[in-house]
Every structure is written in structure tokens, then in C-alpha cells.
Length: 196
Image 1: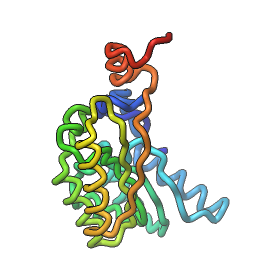
Image 2 (image 1 turned 90 degrees about the vertical axis):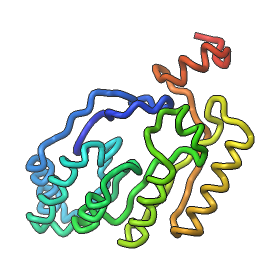
Image 3 (image 1 turned 180 degrees about the horizontal axis):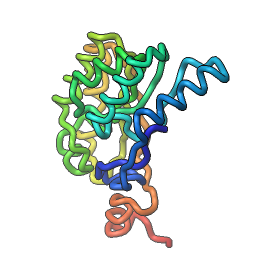
Image 4 (image 1 turned 90 degrees about the horizontal axis):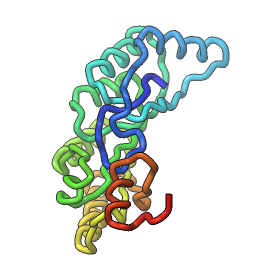
């Protein structure tokens, strides 16, 4: 983990608005070197909630990995609204695969869940990762509070379109209500949660 917390405010996330802090690039590089030297490990999964939460800091870390010639392969989670030059630098630093939280193909649902990302940004990112060869999975959720049948269909259609247009994988799961989230408060107000 190169960072903890997340500065974003998605209503469904248990970590929403959690204080974001990150380690120095030097600290991360030292740890990677340790695993390489002690265990001959050269593939890593960065478990940050959002590796690209601070794009400038992520660029600094990627550049440090390149400068130190670590020659590693790695994976991470990202958002769609990140600078494309960061994604390119990640690829140059050994990033082979990313997961991007899209959540829905409905503009109105995106607004309600306070994702802070547009579908145009999603497609811009997916086009770029296809071009530079980063394997990508887009994550979606269904049953957002207030989601209509038509909005759910929009999501399914969007998933099919990006699969065929950009050759990426998609995954979908139900929206879950976690304690302490904005969505829990909404669910209680609407009587969806009766106990506790």
C-alpha cells in the first residue's frame, strides 16, 4: 500500500471522505527493492483504494520506479478522471493492469451517487488504455438507490458498448449498504433499513 484513505465522496463507499495520506516515493521504492532482493519478487498489486487519487504524487512514484530501473510489473485501482499522461507513465513504469470504478452507465445515477466522473471521461480513459496496452476491467454496480429499470438498462448497454469498442472486461455487482455511508442514511430515511 502506497497510500491510505480516499478524498472522494461517493455515497456508497465505506471509505468515502476518509483522510487521505500517502507514503513518500522513496519509502515505496525501498520496500519494493527489499522484496526484489530478499524474495525475488517482481510483480506487485498496489492495494491503495485509488492509486491515482493524487495524480502528481502518482507521477512522482512512477518516475522513481523508472529511474531506479526496478523492472517490475504491477496492478492497481484507478478512477476515470485522471490525466492520460499519468496513465502513460504508469505503463512505462510497469503497470500491466488496472481496475476502474465506473459504477453505472446512467448519467443521472452518476450524479446521484456523487461519483464526480463523466461517461465521456470513462471512454477517454478506455480508449487510451486500449491504445497503450494496459489490460483493464471496468467495475459496475446495479440496484443503486432510486435506480429505475431504464437506468439499469443504460448501464447494461454501456457495458456492452465499451466491451465491444475497447476490448475491455467488465464486472457488475449489487450496490451494498455499508454502515456509516451516505447511502445508509438515505436507506434509513426511506425505510429500507428498519433495524439498528
